[in-house]
Image (cartoon, rainbow, N blue to C red; front, side):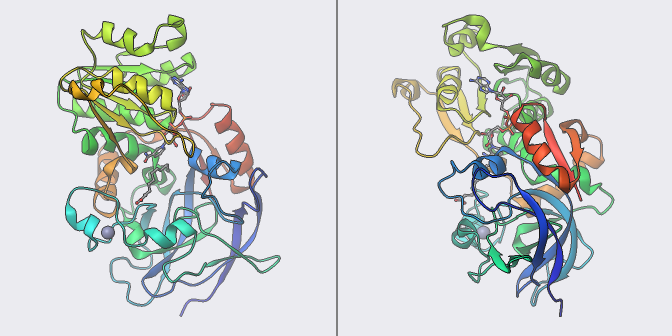
Length: 376
Ligand code: NAD
Ligand code: DAO
Ligand code: ZN
């Protein structure tokens, strides 16, 4: 049976402090679990949000990170769905295929390990992570904790992918890209010829743009207050870009409604601000326009609009991980990437070593990155 592994990880000792790269002991996988040697992980705003301390559910000390890919190093008792040596993308939303949610055919929000994952522990209520220096237990994060050379997850939380695919690229299929592409395909089911607006042109918004291109949208309007984002948006297929700052006090939804003869068929909010969520809803066309919330707002914030906006046929929806069922759909996204149909490498602005992880956070804060990737 596999024993504990001593390796390196980036520990978040407390909120608001830089991550500390040091020795971490990663326990063996228990029954139903797998241990993965990470090859690469993306750095996402959710990691920074929790580290900042504004996430009320953030608990420390922990190992952050949720956009990872690697190779299965060992498996616990009873694991049959994956084998040692398999290449996997780690899933912060698992897919058990047995719970009420999985069986509904209506959602990707598997409930199998929800309660323990939210508390930062494995399904048996314990952690596999220990800070080697002090023997202090560390909490898991989002069920993944990818900022470490090894991670332990339930087998239902890894997607086996084509071993020929570079793990340093497909790690981004752990969050940002499926979120944007899936919002278009799974959540909104955007049809050919539809008009689309994307609020926020970061990694997630660009993935919405990419999804809209793949869906055959006729018009894709990017909206961002940082005009520096427009070049990439155009590269990914936005047909127009709009900067709300160019319109003074005029609400951006009015600008968009005028540009589009009454509004868009689909709008997406990929920023995480309640004001832009309202703008996106109100920029959707009367009678049929659908607006999708992707951005994660601060704890306790509320959205608002006049109910008349919904009475007159606009629909307000939201999505987690783009409605993607990870074990089933992530391997298909890898195939699309290998076939040259899905852009991933274009989303990677810069690669870092684990020792440079705080630089990756700083560059992300400065808005310099579509995505930064830590290569182990
Ligand atoms: P990002 O910071 O890279 O991109 C956000 C963009 O919004 C930036 O380009 C910024 O200039 C722009 N922006 C900021 N304020 C604006 C405003 N008032 N009007 C127009 N544009 C504005 O972030 P990202 O990584 O692309 O993530 C976007 C959001 O999606 C975040 O809230 C993140 O937490 C969330 N997210 C959600 C899911 C999900 O499953 N629902 C998954 C991943 C990320
Ligand atoms: O099943 O209740 C649930 C929650 C599943 C996780 C949803 C997370 C959505 C937002 C992710 C932010 C970026 C990683
Ligand atoms: Zn399930």
